[in-house]
Length: 419
Ligand code: PMP
Image (tube, rainbow, N blue to C red; front, side, top):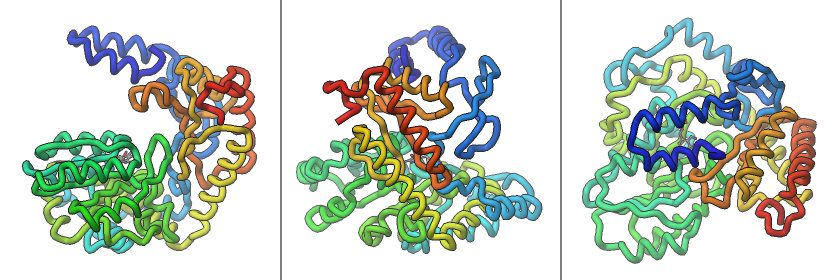
């Protein structure tokens, strides 16, 4: 098996527990990308260590979602350290018990204001935000229609819900969504349409204006996951719904706090009554809060974003620069627009080779294989960061081009990689 994904897909058919566990053990025992870790917290240039050989390699990092490098911002670090001294380490229990501190409350107020909603609820992670919110919103007479590329936390939230039926629509295809709304329109008590503002594996932005305009003719609640846009779209990071001026037409906005805001946690923002409902979801009731230091990071990060609009501008400038360079070399970047840049490589073996050779030349990136994406849509995912230098971008694109030419994923007219 080239990828762990393929192996996992295969193992779904294997009932024997020992065999399943051993197959995975054999896979991770090999020296591959799954046995690598960072010597230190992420920055754009890092030592990457091999668990198997102990070898350290200095690499430009392309796989971290801290778009604005606020995990390395001195004001953020100072405020987190101060919170540690003032509030201690863990919260000790769930928010519903007495885990909430004044820091957590302040985050909820700031976030609801930022995304333009009446209220917000803080969760310990982005993943459990989706689990809690979706499972709590959808009842047993309801339908959920979701984009086919939605994140695993959304799919699992749907599975946990009591919804009578759930169906997907073709990725970013408003006509398909409309057809499904027409077909199922009256048969359910409530309909929820769930999408992401930017998709984590393709970097595509959702056609949110077109989706909200369907509300003129169809009745549904719109749920948008802004994990990859909150903090980096909108002049002060208010998110993509805000940037498009459609926040009031989106019923529920959620996001993680582990990406642009460089902490952990997630939030759900909506009218007060829906927030009250969500506070009765299991992940909110029964899961410990994010720590005071994590909360202080979120607050400090929000302040940094608000006070430094140049952070967002520079990120998008770098994204534009890198895309321009890749496109000029002939790379096909699909429909991506956000700072997530996919480099499509159809052949799994070549994808693995390219990623490994990039690593050997000091470029650390994430390969994405089937079944995370369709069989012929394997890709390398490069996540642009505000702190990437021009030299790091130029070097990465040059090496990528050289390696792709060598493996003939360039200049091959059948290849997905080059247009
Ligand atoms: N939603 C989306 C769209 C995501 O991409 C992710 C994380 N990759 C999450 C939710 C979960 O967030 P977290 O990892 O912070 O729990």
